[in-house]
Image 1: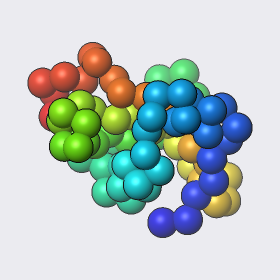
Image 2 (image 1 turned 45 degrees about the horizontal axis):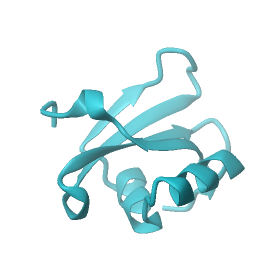
Image 3 (image 1 turned 90 degrees about the vertical axis):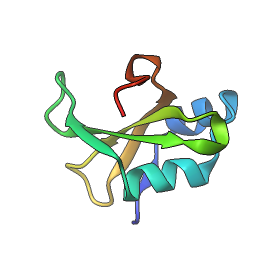
Length: 83
């Protein structure tokens, strides 16, 4: 899947040691998709990352632009046990 990263997404990926492959996998093959409750143009995509202890990666993706744009990335502790 073709997508772009915002500067914010690039920064937090580096700070939090989130591998680009994990973001790519989560965007392309999420285990769960949810609309963002605050922004209709953003979709939240979730995927467990076995290489990171099975923690759940959340990728916020702006789907209203072409190509889609990753606006935020982080490990979502609230999703523990939900996937």
